[in-house]
Image (cartoon, rainbow over all chains, first blue to last red):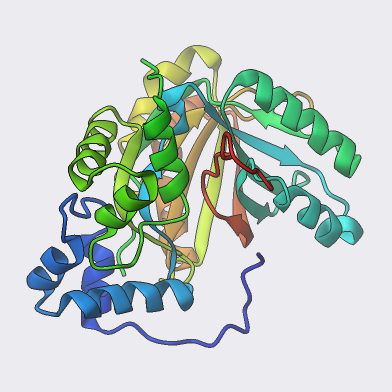
Length: 158
Length: 168
């Protein structure tokens, strides 16, 4: 799934922005969460559902729902980088993205030009996936497991 | 620190990792799928959130679409013995979204401190990078700024389903 620059641009209205700004976390664990959110924003339950669906369809959101931390149940995330020859970039990208363990993947400006995150349920599975990636692409993956985590506080203003 | 999931928690993760159902009563819908009641879905999700298994529940913006075109992975070579002291200070800067110590891969890669910096303009991110540089001061031996030129994939966690037919 490559982000396309020719995507049709739509715009966000005030309520869309409020939804995005207020609910990057803390979406209610309640039998009628869309109703609760609608009450706060002054719109109907149905409209909350429609707006979230549209924001997903238009690419303003990549996901909606619970975000899990695999490291709290025995797994691990591993940042990994590869030096991909430019003439093989699209081909290798397809192979790498085809692995369900690849959670995110970014092209970056460096000799190591492909950076992705593996989400695996154990170190053993991580090692196996790294080996399979190496075999499938013919390119050595360099793992950058975190040794210390200093802060995670990701929030974007719409 | 790590928790063991029981099979119902695991199934809840499998059923929601692609998203919360966009229907009026999403937790009831999940309960129907799993053959349990809505209260149990809610209390299990609450417990997973308390334990940090669920980091958060909400909307995950595509930051490029919100105008954050400059998403730099800034990487710094600082003495190993300074990382534990300086890392938390870099992480505490309000414009650094994640910060980690990671291993070097010499000679290819000499950087051991990673800090993600986001901004809507080049000027804005440059200013932020200067802030990190100033904080590290004389301990910064070298650094690189790796802008991301393209998102190639952003799906998040995908556990393989256990039991039943698994086409993954």
